[in-house]
Length: 290
Image (cartoon, rainbow, N blue to C red; front, side, top):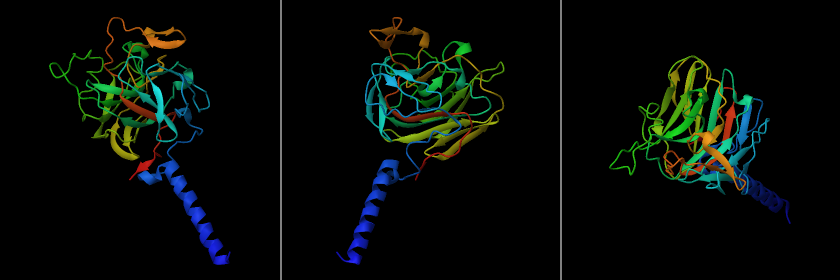
């Protein structure tokens, strides 16, 4: 083998390795930066959703805030590794019990890769939130604005839990809501753009005590001046659905929802989530999709 041949082969191997790295990080799909965000000093929790099955959802963050998945979710191919697929069911969710470390003080970032199969029929479909109908259990919510249908187009009327939160914004837009620490109504903020169906999209919302910013695919989409703090509560973290967590019970080792006579999954997300991270500061370094 000549020296020139060895050089050519070596370059070919390096190119192959680089291409493999692009496939792993999403570079082949027009994404710069790693597909899986790092766990760093301001990461509160990082659910990679790479488990191969079951209902245990580990947290790669420093506090190990492990979640429990509902029986109507399953693992699927993800944006980075595996992901969790959610279905139109009340038992499609992930619940992370409350922990005081979730109170992030002066800053917050909530981010996730999202692949929607359909927009919700009603006000919104939550990605992740700490929010319930109990006013003392409301902190923040990151969701996707739904179709806001009413009968006869919708089979059933909405229960109206989020009607006051979704007053504007495009169908498929990103919605971020927080309950101020002082006594006042919830504050809701929406993106200008909508996220597409059937494609992985990175969404993020940040708050630093004076500005809320919404990012889509790493690009700043909207920002709003708003001063204050996020109310502390003992609400758990709930992914991919919205209901009263007090109605959950363990049955045969699985966490299930007592429907209370209404089995309709009004706010269930239909699609997949991956790489969900909560941080204790307002970030700006997100994967850029070109």
